[in-house]
Structures are given as structure tokens and as C-alpha cells.
Image 1 (tube, rainbow, N blue to C red):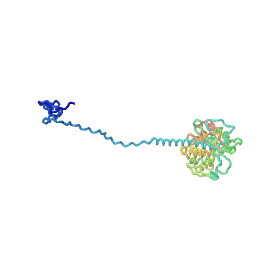
Image 2 (image 1 turned 120 degrees about the vertical axis):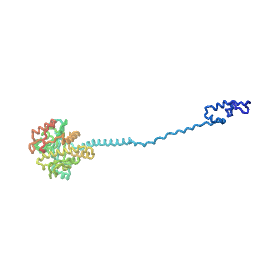
Image 3 (image 1 turned 90 degrees about the vertical axis):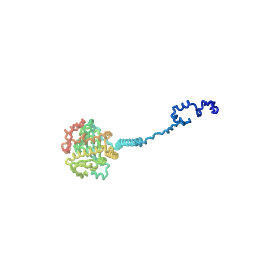
Image 4 (image 1 turned 90 degrees about the horizontal axis):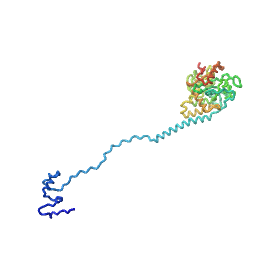
Length: 398
């Protein structure tokens, strides 16, 4: 860097050093002064009468530090959705309930089936040929087996020994969806009992049990009985009570001490003992056994309808109780399978509806002798699986 000139060594003649202006020394050069004053400096004119001095350059204001703009206030949080885990928890509970219900529907019939008594009811000789559809022989026996002394008194069963049949019905379920038929054979019907000659049809049961009764019915009707179903006194009462009772509609007041029955006219709810007296009474109607078989069809259809109703299926207590009562009440042929019995129950439910027929075999007098031509025509329609062509005989409505 060049040394600063010493002002004491300036040359004579007043010449200013070449760089004196740089060090703040007064300058005599009018041209230089003029240049300074006429420069673009805006303060030159104002300072024309003042000696030059070091100026402080104006400072720019310092920029303010950057501040982040204020944020908008946070919105309130939305309601949280139900946790997926809780939904899955409830879904599993519903699934378990459904599975348990399905298991109950399957397990209860299996348990009930194991309790049903099987009997040999299939004749070994002289049987009619197989026919389309399924034909069942339904027997209501007056067996007092298993009844206590108090129950015998309540049901007015008397003290008769052995077994007889109070009810004999033939049910036919068509193969291709025709009307289901429930046909009553009055127990006093006079027919030929194999080995015993002409007797009342219920005598066959007393002489030879289920097998002889099946053979007698097959011989009298010409129809093959595919399945045998029997129900006794105590079982009938238990079935009625298990389904919560049944509605009966007598056309007149009925009072029969022998059947322990005393009811008023018109529709009413009946418990087990009352329903039993209603289907057994013979002393309250001029038609006797003919009127009784109509009441038997009425009550049997009502029991079947209540047993197969949706309320029974969705009520575990009633479902189990009904299945247990049915198992205790029934005796079936050894050849009857679970599907056969289920089809029987479904057919019994249908007979009281629009798709069912409830008839009595045609007869000519109260002895009871069948009207052979009309009876043969009826049995022919059944054998042909053509129940829609049947002209149903219902003397109780005439």
C-alpha cells in the first residue's frame, strides 16, 4: 500500500498532493470542487457553503425477522367411528348364536328319535302292491301303560286291561304335490279280520297288535300301509300340553262323565285332559263314533299345526318339550325312518289347511257297514295317487 504523503513535505507553489483528497485534506482544485458539487449527490447543493466532511450514509432499516402467519384455530375433532374390533365382537356373538340355534334344531330331533319305541308292524304275507306316494296308518290306542292312578282317574280311562284302538286313520301324502288326505276308519266298522272272521275293525288290534291291525286295514282297503304310527292316552295329553293347548270348536255344549268332559259350545282353548275327553266322548252326539272321528281329526290336525309352527322352532324350551313329548307318546313301525316321520308330521300339518282333505270312509248305516262302491272308488283314487279327484264324505257336516 503506498505511504500517506506528509503534508509538511508538500512542494512549494502550493500544489496539493495528488491523493490529498483521499485523506480528507482541503483541496484547492476548483475543478475538483466543481465536480464534487455538481455530482449526482443530492446533498451537494445544500452543503455548498460548508467545508467537505465525511458523510454518514443513510442506513436501511433492518428487515424484521420472518414470523409465521397465525394458523387458523383447529377444528373440533370428528366423532370417532365405532372401533372395528367392537363390530367384529358383536358379529362373532351373532354368529355363535346362529350356530347354536342350528345345532339345537339338529340335535333335538336326533335325541328325540333315540327315545321313540319301535314295534314290529309289518305283515309278512298277503300284502298289496306298492303305490305312489306315502301312506301312513295312524292309530290312537287306549293303552294305560305308564299312567298313575291319579292320571287314570283324571283322564277317565277306566280299569280295562289290554289295548284297544279308539282311533284308526289313514293318511296319504301324494308323491307330486296333490292334496294330503286324512281318512277316518270308524272303529266300529265291520270288516274281515284275518283268522277271526267278521269283527269290528278295532278288534284286530286287541287280537294281534299292530301287525294284525295293519294286515286287516290293508285287506279291507286294498292299500299298502307304508308306515305305522301309534299314540297312547298319556302321550296324547302330553303332546297337547307341550304345544300349549289346542283350540276346539264344539257345535254344542258337551257333558260326558265317562270321558270326564264338561265344556261349553263354541271355540275355546283346551288343555291335554280336556282335549282327550273331547276326542273320546261318544255319548254327546247322535252320530256316536262317526262324530267322534271328526273331532279326532280336528284335534290331531291342531296338535300337528302347533308343533310345526314357527313359534315352536324359535322357542328353545317349547321346541325341546314338544320333541320330548312326541318321543314319549309315539310308537312307530321298525321300517319307519326319520325322513318318513318328518314327512308324516308335515302332512298332518297340511291336512287342516287348503291343501288337505279330511274325510270318513263312506258307509250305509251306523253299524258301521261301508258303502262298498263308494269306498272302492275312494281307495282307487288313493292307489292312483290322485287325491284331487276324491269326493270327500263328511257326514258330521250333513
